[in-house]
Image (cartoon, rainbow, N blue to C red):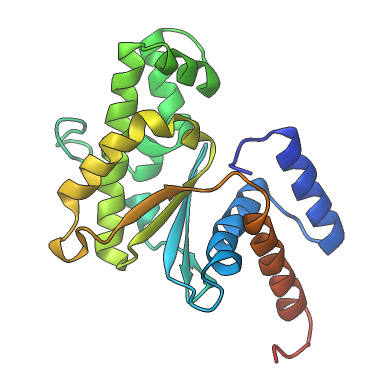
Length: 227
């Protein structure tokens, strides 16, 4: 469940929503799976703080503190990007969402190609060594790394989980991401920040997601005491 609207994702979200009698979105389930990887797997007794960044048509960032979701990352979507040579000193109106969302990336790729395209086609072009697309991914990754550095500097969250449809191009933008991240982190966080993709297997992550969903359903929609 990586943010792509495939049949498995839709069927799981629909079934979970039916069982709980609550609306469930693929993005929400992906966030819960990010939580599950750290709650249900090897950190059951020692949950760590992290934030999950969903790189889809729009950006969504969720903080997890003490093993529980703590709301959106303050200010992330409004972070202004102006890092040369990939940005501009006149980019004061640009936000992370307007540059780093899947919709923004696709629009820029279509401008470069001169025609309508899809993310899967763009990734295939990168697989085939298209220099224009590879450069586009490099620029994207660097900007994303700079933004993540700002987010870490502001929040002190040093663990980042990335998911969503843009993660399909991870192999092509992650090296530049790490470069931009390393170059803009405050020295206190250097060598302590980890960035990884949301796992695509359904075992531990899905169990954690179900646990989180049931926790919200039982303890936040009823009068049952938590203990």
